[in-house]
Image (tube, rainbow, N blue to C red):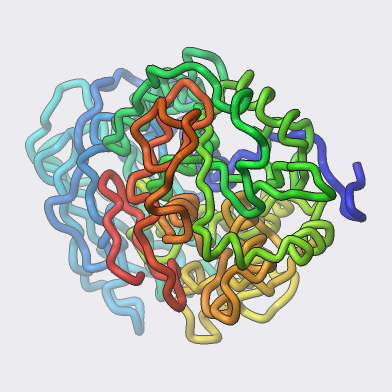
Length: 550
């Protein structure tokens, strides 16, 4: 398809690469090494003995470190402790370093310590660090359950190995062999990361199955997503009492160019967006009058009303019946008069035509969300896991990694075409840690291999910027740093609004047009604009607190 001079792809469900990375790591373990008690291992690759997993406890239980190394800094999340969804992702526990970063001394390093689902106490430390391997000691005390196992992933930026700990009151050793001198040198700097499966090897398989079932798009899958939002975000989605759609009785003249439609829908990719950002929406569109006709303009991924993905327009009278048929819950957020009057419709239309047909903003999807080292990742996801998983995923799916992560990192470093390992090396050469590289603000002016990259809420805000709504202040913030939550919390909408009588069915400060669930926009219209807005904001579940002017 070609629209506005840009190639437009058919509908495609772009599974976020971090989920694929987590699946890759877990599936590598299902052979699994987790079937046998810990023993010395000759190779640190993903290959594992082909024996069957033994029984394990299926009841989810907390797995929180009582203490850990200084590198273990991720906060805990009480709301997610009993939820199976996404709990198959290995959770970061600590980093094991060489006893001496300057030479291969045989003196043991400081241990990492925590309490696990199976043991009252787990201690790990490096005993020796040689040119061929790191020898690691694991000591456990007081087993909590007879049929229980702790499954651990030991990983560097080059390789990993899975191990199962089943014996209590015991000390064990394993050898993590380097695959190359480059890996050994990297581990001397960044250590060996230790991750744990919260529910053990077998329990994590159950978590994986339940998570995948949530992505099927069936009524049962939607019920699972509601459960996930309740358990992981502490948010109980409310059904609406009013089922009559507003658009048939609302004249189109009520809408003005630049007004936003905020959309809640029970689709798993939207649920993932909401879990990560703390938003109560998964999609946003804009209203735009073009040649006397009212259009919905939007940047679409797989779950829009049309059959394509990318930046597109649809006549309002065609858009809303399709959205209604797909059970979208849609709220109309009208711009405040001062912003609506500043909206230059001619400039907006010209800008829209220049970007129409561009693909959905997959290139910076991750970077508009992540601003901090450890306060944006919903547990058990962590920056440490992503940093170790990306090189592995890059080896098997380089085009996917380049699209979702690689191009953005190259832009941040002023490089072009570097792979993940090369990007990590270049980042360190420039004196930037990989976590700091992830956190660098996205820039609206950056162009990717297929043009500007805009997710749905960014597209709406860019439309306003290019319509002159913010005047000279538009240069003081980056629309590409905004999340869906920012898009409805920023103070640009009608405040004391005399709503049309058709909108009186819901007790909301905006107008819900239709849908089976209440569009609950917590913090709506509450954040005044400021310079560098939303460039350093936390989004940690379940409360998603963030500082003022972050």
